[in-house]
Length: 294
Ligand code: AMP
Image (tube, rainbow, N blue to C red; front, side):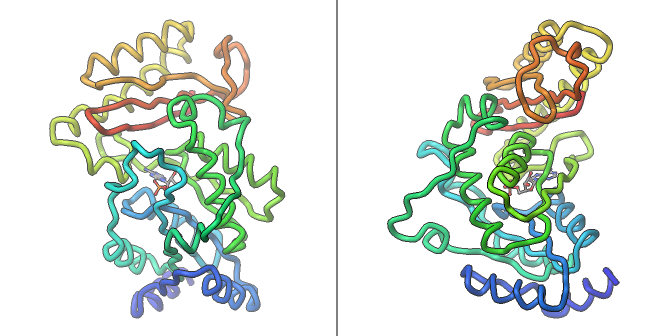
């Protein structure tokens, strides 16, 4: 069934629509025939991590819609909005191979019409970590994701654990706003050396690319130390030192949080709840993030 769907679409490629009205018309048509619909929001420059989300979509739904939108409201003026990789033709080829039903690639004006004045305010899992250095970020993410989910009205939407705090913020937002969508978490897809796949890995020089997997190594070592009973302060300090010693220019955070609420856990493993280690660090001009379960 899945193979047939993929083959049928490979002949023509996914349709691409650029307006909410066209997106709604397509989705409404599918809904009439009883199809379940999955949505995968992305900023494009697709890699195997994104594609794994599409595959999960097809395991759970008859139709998969991928959105490609580099969302200006989640970038601060000094960040990489202008230089963020945009590879729409290649993205469409990759999505075609998977049998993606529809790509929604709106303009900024379609998502943010003149006079746009509404923004979602986030707290709870949005506090700290990314927000400490990117205070604008989750408001922008929550605003655009809510708009995408309202526009497409999917049964489920798939988000990667790669952006773990974002996943937690989106889950919280969907619940708080009563959006009728199931938020599905997808495991992080990694390069063979452990580096989490990311569109921003394209920024790395060959030398930086060699250093980058240290982030994952340190997460693994720190998680093992915590499981082995090393005090959280000690384990985190060792991890922070190892990241900087490996050649990272700066560390935004290496922290231990409650895996669900993302609240700090000063007592570490004594809480008895599932914990998550999260890291953000700079390699030259590239900011990398990663995380793992403890
Ligand atoms: P982005 O295009 O970076 O906004 O990512 C779009 C979606 O893909 C988000 O839900 C990300 O968490 C997810 N994603 C990005 N990289 C990976 C990865 N390496 N493994 C799994 N999911 C990922």
